[in-house]
Amino acid sequence: MNRVYLKTYGCQMNIRDSEAVAAMLRERGYSVVESEHEADVVLLNTCAVRDQSEQKAIGKTGYLAKRKHRDPEFVIGILGCMAQNRGTALLERLPDLDLLVGTQKFHRVPDHLDNLKAALQGQGPKPDSIIDLDEEAGSQNTIRAHEIGKRKVSAFVSIMQGCNMKCSFCIVPKTRGSERSRSIDDIVKEIEELAASGTREVTLLGQIVTSYGRGEIPKRDGKGPFVQLLEAVSRIIGIERIRFTSPHPLGFKRDLVEAYGQLPKLCEYVHLPLQSGSNKILRSMKRPYSRERYRQIVNALRTVVPDIYLSTDVIVGFPGETNRDFEETQQFFEEIGFDMAYIFKYSKRSGTPSAAMENQVPKELKEARNQILLRILEKGSQDRNQSLVGTTQEVLVEGPARRGENTFTGRTRGNRKVVFSGQEHLVGELVPLRIEGATVSTLQGALL
Image 1 (cartoon, rainbow, N blue to C red):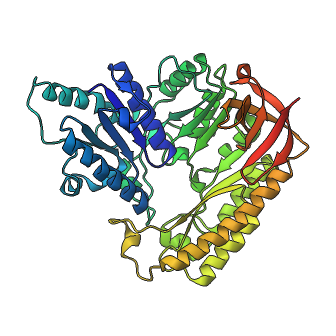
Image 2: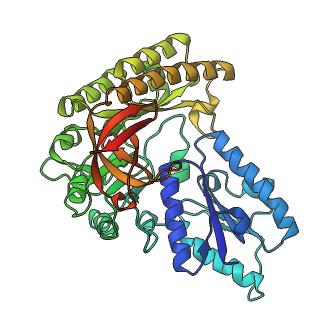
Image 3: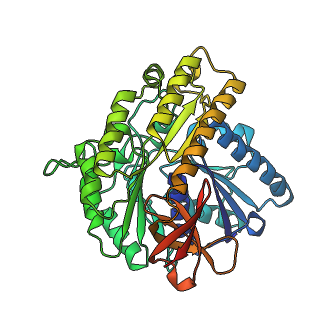
């Protein structure tokens, strides 16, 4: 029972959690394999933000259960947000589960697999299922392991866990708990280790990353904890680029806006969740800002960095969203001119205030509104990419492209993907590329 396959659903936080679990398993002597067909153990790290994500994981578990009926020693585990959200009720629907681990217990996975392994080898009693869903103090400090000896040009770093916001549509406070932050010193040490192994770019992660250290770390020289962290990371030798996600508009105070003009390593790219362009819907969502305040933040950022790249999240079809509300969102979406957006059709999540709201929007109308914004986004992204043709862009080379011999990919500071012909020795380097072509999602470049 030494071969483990990890499948991840959902956001960058989940990807980072899975990376840490994989690293901890390798340290314990397990082999993390690339295919479920090679594995003795399959662990699904799950998402609960949308029903579709949960249904995919449930369907996958049902499929894996057929194998377990043929091979009783095959182990199935569900980790993360769906485990935390649904709890032991999952066992009623998925009775073949061996392991159910919540979001504050990822670091316990190797111990649980050791216990299951011992039981299967006759060295201890075999539990029906191992369930570990409780809160654990200090769990935010346990997601720091990275695979030893494997270079990551760009790496995710978890700086905090949990969320104290009360958005009416969101299940995250239930699945991730309240805000808990790591210390600046501990984060810096992790990133220094990454830099020593060849990492050149880090993305700082948190459910509300701009809430980092709130109530735990005092302001210094007028700067909040998150900006203090950005300054500390920017001093690390070897790290050339810094990104972060996912923030909240409330976090964009003067100190953070000014940081874009003061910290050269902070990339000119901001993910700024909007959710709706209608003030009425924003109030119903319990989002504590208006479209006017959002516009002020964007204008302030563009004053400091005129060519900054903006991405966002938008939910269409929120309960009570009228045609007029959506038209306000559409107009505002066009006005801001986002370079990238994650556009979601509202998904009712049991236990959230919005699930009980009246005037739920029909599925067909959600889809129509989704397509309208996608078309606007596609045109805007194409135009922005086309404007780069003929310019020279600094690109961090990430690795070989999926197709084409001697073809490599990298990203601009504005987070635009670039494909170009190159050589292996360029991986991890910052190189100037002349942009020669553009599609909606990709730039074609040439080495100078």
